[in-house]
Image 1 (cartoon, rainbow, N blue to C red):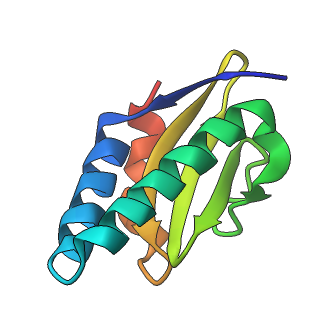
Image 2 (image 1 turned 90 degrees about the horizontal axis):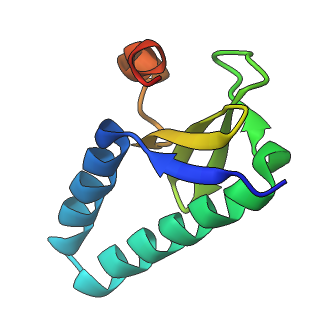
Image 3 (image 1 turned 45 degrees about the vertical axis):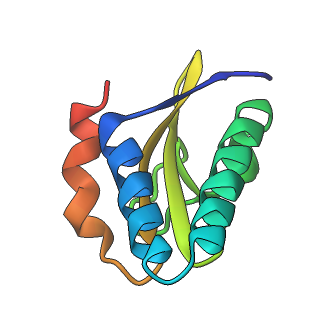
Length: 104
């Protein structure tokens, strides 16, 4: 199964904000986190069910992969994977719950 991987505008903003935050201390690590996140997202298209079901949501189509201390949250759709958010592992998920309704 090789699904197209798309990023929501909010998820793109999340990744940019993470990179900017990390770059304050290290441009090198900021680039490394972005590169690894993009690599994981591409691989998710080949194996969409590899991520675990997000425990706070419990929907088998909403899954997550971990990249360092970040959670890449995505929705498995019939013809694509939609990256919905990239958040720090300690951030509350309730702050992004409205993204699942908006991102169609």
